[in-house]
Length: 272
Ligand SMILES: C[S@@+](CC[C@H](N)C(=O)[O-])C[C@H]1O[C@@H](n2cnc3c(N)ncnc32)[C@H](O)[C@@H]1O
Image 1 (cartoon, rainbow, N blue to C red):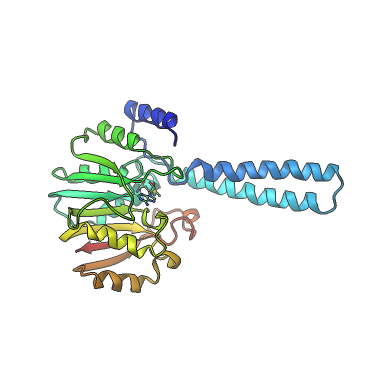
Image 2 (image 1 turned 45 degrees about the vertical axis):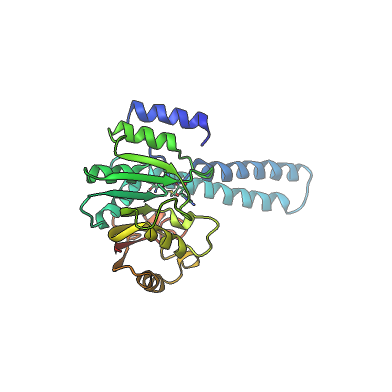
């Protein structure tokens, strides 16, 4: 998101409800749609030039690109932020699994536009919450919008946001009483074995602190076998860790259960 559009979103957030955005960014819809249009134009040109086979092949590819665009447009609609929407309910699953008394500091890793950081602060009125994100270009999120969203809920004093990478958190060991994350770890580039991102998140949690991380943990190419992941976490000295498969939550529409969406999603939770 560029500064201009971030500014517009801030105004929108201030004027009305929080602007939490959508996990399916508009480029997932616009890019395949644009490719479909180009392929149709090329197919017409190939037909005019009477090139055998090419028009049909190009039209076939255009249909595939069009279907991809339609799928992501539909997924965006299904996820759309707001009360009772799927995105908000998925974030709610993280807090449901966090067994914390709300005293002290909490960290939300890969906070996007801050929905989980804000929900955490609302649920635990004594807590101070930090949301971190690298707010890269692949996403339509920004720190400005996070701060506006928190201000809109009257939480500016207790919820703060910092730019940082989940791969190397700029915090000392044992800095937080609770650590949460929603659908960030698998996105962390530059770390091939995503278990290392989980380890980094646990590093900044104090002994006895509570954690709840939701991610695509059954994506073997990122996290390996789930049993091995749990064994590794126990090997890092974590007192208790459990896994809950959340992809099959009753509210999850079938169209979102595909492996490249949230079909491999689950929650790791427990105490360090
Ligand atoms: C699917 S979004 C989820 C955002 C937010 N947790 C939510 O529930 O709306 C993934 C987030 O991870 C963030 N992210 C990806 N790689 C990151 C990294 N290396 N460090 C910090 N944040 C990262 C992205 O910027 C994005 O905000």
